[in-house]
Length: 438
Image (cartoon, rainbow, N blue to C red; front, side, top):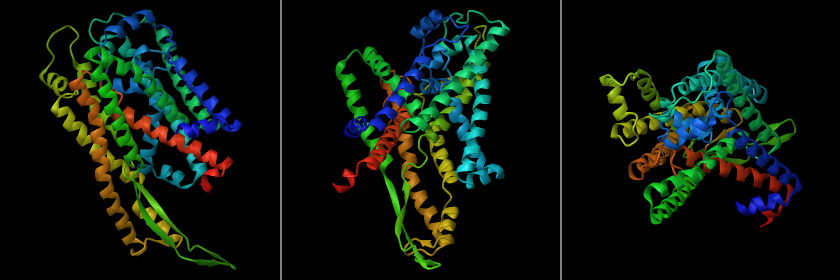
């Protein structure tokens, strides 16, 4: 990886793209420290110093915003509204025929779906910013008990300005991500998420060292982290290659086909999406219980106590079992809607392709579905195991659910890093053929 980056900086065109990408990342991190109008930065800093680690959905959004959410900066919502909007639009392609038709139109259809995602992102940003301000008016819901008022002004005009600022911040992040995609290296949105998560790594590790007070535990955690990263890289690169042979066919006076290729089926085809889905869905009961808790200091009702004891704390057995079950379900669900064996088999048959030993058409679709199911099982178990690492760390080291070497953070960090390095190497090969001659 370091060799590829060093060679890229020696190439003028790639050097400009890399420097532009780093500049946008720096702007993104700078915006994460600019407070929203109407928020007392001093009081927020005091609340952050005495706050318990955020968990559940708020902790997930805070992770994707690089800590900007709990700082209530102009980039507090981060890239989460865009991620949610993209996932919703992708899921709607199965339900809405119009979206399914756009998906089949190629580049023009994809451009329209991207436009729909932008509109939905702004709508979700307005909704989430209003929800965040509602939490901010009662700071104990964000930072825990003992936190005083953090809003300097709660007039209607100030609230509207805050909603507008947070929504505009989300729009600006979306624009910065598209700038990286067009003029930089890699996928812009993914790199901004990468930046947010990587920014929290040093503080998370140092917090563990301060809590334990032992350097051997600290370096032991780092060693385990490297082993987890190696495992994630191995699984993310693993794939089942199904051979495909294309028969020769004559069009006019020219002969086409006769080539051999393969269909790469990754072990983890769902990526990090099942973990995000499971975390968000599991946080809803805790969020409802939080709103249902009485504010006058009296004891809450029985179901609220049960939710707080079993579905809020990450070290609960019921929480872990529910989390694993949701990850397994969403892994199979997401793979089933993103990879259609019948459609792939029909396309192969249309262009004269077949799997050796398998008849074209329905037998091919059944074979693809059989292979896909068998490789999705270990992929789902792998996602569940990686996602349990922060919960185990929560129990052993009193860490939070955003423990750096596990869960959503490590999957995104490794996945984006591998994809970016692949794009750098691909662009290097376009300018230098030495790699093909070795």
